[in-house]
Image (cartoon, helix red, strand yellow):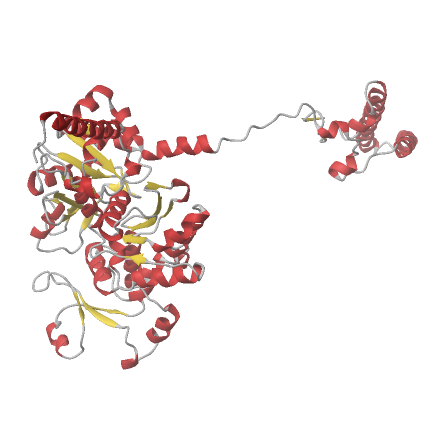
Length: 580
């Protein structure tokens, strides 16, 4: 049965109205620009719409290594973020992975651009960036996603903007914390939905614990401890130098020893007992073959004691016993070497208890580990066991460790590059030239917005000024305030009478002495004259003191009460806030 033209027209009008209403809704959502705190996985509809544009350069600029790559790459390239110099070739500097061209790596000297996680040496950082952008991944005509530490300083961000926008002339840029990228990757790939989670980033210089609630960082509970891989390497150098060989200049080699032989103990006391045994009963002791940079470029751990000794003939060997687990133990107990700080497990517990009470059980279910220190064998299990002992029994504790904790943040940047929200997060070169560094600092420093909202929700209490002191209204004695005894009037009169009698007795004794001096012999006349002068001086001093006391007593009686001036030399009047 065919429909007439009049019946088809209303249906077409309904279709047009529906499409128009959907477009108006989408326009309203697009008008609102998301912030860096609202990075969350897109819905199933928006996953089909990917970011359309040139490939994006992702740079995870760590303190020890830089993870760099384009969004179209499968994995990131790990490059040392430093300039190195060796003793064998003193005239040449090795930048990044150029160190692979060096034959002898003994006595390697590092020039690191970061201190305590912040970039401070730009004469080192700029050549490393030049090398990476010219030889590893080109930066021309690409947007850049770059990581920065939490609470990054304004001056550091201004210099970064100047280098990238003015010298490299990039088109757009987005700076974000690596914990945000790790959270985005975990929520998007592992959890599958936006859940509260805690990201633990244990890197080269420090360890940060960042909670995320409703897709946003909860800054009041964010924690940082200055314990990282750099401290572990330095501690291992000191132990080996004290017990076996002097290796204080071999940072590169000892760092490899740490990575190859150390592990995190799940039962520290039991491992210490085993390490104290001798012979085959000690299963912890290992022999590490140091490289000679001729036949062996990287050291290794001897697994057996038979044929391996023949291979290691002529090479130096380190005997590692309890150093294997006591060095990584500093991550959980920094107080072992005198650092007044909590460990990683205690820091996570403090972070959980600083969050809202209703979110604490959910945060314990989703704990994400990232950073180079997470590669220690047993690190994940130790974190789980410690948290299980600290947290309530009815809470579910789940610790997630990715396959590669070092490049996990870079993988999050790669996932973010396919999100259509990314276009609204970028700051273009035109915006930078028009508005300056203040605009980029406000866009890439989400802690500023969090501080404003926190101040609005919890305003500071107003302090009311007291018009008069309470002590003025209360009748408090000097003994009540200071524990001092007040001089009574009777005691004062007795003391004055005693002073007057002392004065009279001194005058009579002085007269008798002067008479005796006049009747003495002629040969003693000179001595008597000298004694007489001394006596006159003492008489003058005593008379002056008596006059001063009497005048002080008369002044205090005439002008003010004696209670506030009897200790006039050192007393403090609390009512007038001044010394008397």
